[in-house]
Image (cartoon, rainbow, N blue to C red):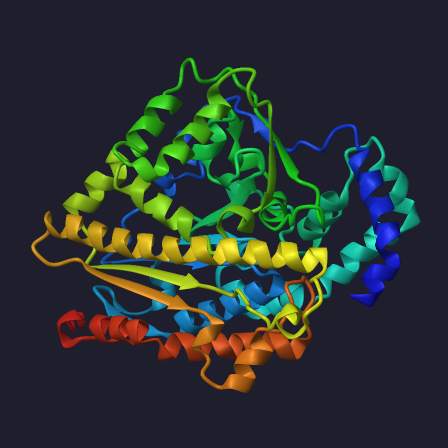
Amino acid sequence: MYLFIKLYPFFLFLLFLSGCSSQSKIENFEITEHSPENQYSYKNNLKNRGEVNLFVSFSGGGTRASAFSYGVLEVLRDTMISTATGRNSLLSEVDVITAVSGGSFTAAYYGLYGDKIFDDYEEVFLKRNIQHVLISGILNPLNWMKFIGSGFNRSELAVNYYDKHIFDGKTFADFRSDMPFVQINATDLSAGQPFIFRQEYFDFLCSDLSQFPVSRAVAASSAVPVAFAPIVLKNYHGCHESESAGDAIKTHYQDNTRTEQIKSGLFRYIEKDLVDYVHLVDGGVSDNLGVRVLYDTANILSNIPEISDEAASNPPKYLVLLIVNAAVSPVKRMDKDPKEPAIFEQLSAASAAQINRYNIETIQLIKDSLQAWASKLSKTADYEVKPFFIQIDFNGIQDKKRNRLLHTISTSLALPAEQVVELRSVARILLNKSPEFQRLITELNAPSNTPILNDY
């Protein structure tokens, strides 16, 4: 903090230089050929994968969230269950991973590389001091002139690093079809609502997601306002006369008053001369847990005919939501001091209070939605579709000293190796000790679920 205060005027100067950029770099391209079979969309990527439908959300929180979510993937990998095809890892049953900010690094890496994540992710990302690399780039005088009039800014430094050292230049066309459907979530700064990197959203911009770099999507998802410049998408317009984007939205969100704001926000993109560019910032601004978009997902899936009809004709036996929350609540200095808190501390506390209240309401909403969805599917099946709602966060650690230490881990892109190890360990402890998680494993490994294998 002392170093930041000393260099504060200098940082303001750099921010000024970044703000002088005449135009942000644009890397989303117009749809030139309609190829629905290649789109990274719900319709093409969410297939019925069996009797377990498992949705996972990774929260924001920098490398802290990345390491915590990585530990959850390790637990899911090591948890074996009985299925119709034999003994499988629970990780293989994950259908959707929705991720925000720090959690999007882990989700995207797993969606691109699969089990390779367990071999090199720590070296590639978790134990790298990426924050130092980015700050060094900002302080490098050779970059200063690039900040003026070239489209090069603080976020471009991040995109370039992520693209070269983490995601190897891959685009959304490179996401593996045998992996979960990965939703990377950012926030439309103007509308103040989530923007999800899937083709359904890019259709409103007449743009092709398949060519979009994964590194740029992750940079948008983690672009903390002011610290990073928004990632900008161009709205190409002109394709909606022959497309049914408006009708699709009406269908997807019909009779759902809670999603009226989302619907009106998406229609903004269709109206000519209203939105020519979309400025994207950290997904945590609109939904730091990534659970609102899970609720949105549930509503969309239940209203898309191709998916809802399949679910109705062949419903799963188990609906599972796993929320991985890496948020912290450190002790605030204002609680021990009668002096007026610093402006940054006041803003941070006010923002945290709003986010926490929003999260509480959202969690209850999605729990109710999960139960309602299971009940709806049960009516079309010869069996009861069983819902499981699993949530883990640091408050589940009962040891007070360990709990306090967890809540002091910073939200940054640089953590000591021992903290990375601790976060992985805590993820294993919390998930394995979760009563709802254990109830799920017991249910899946019950004798009635044990496959009968013929011995020929």
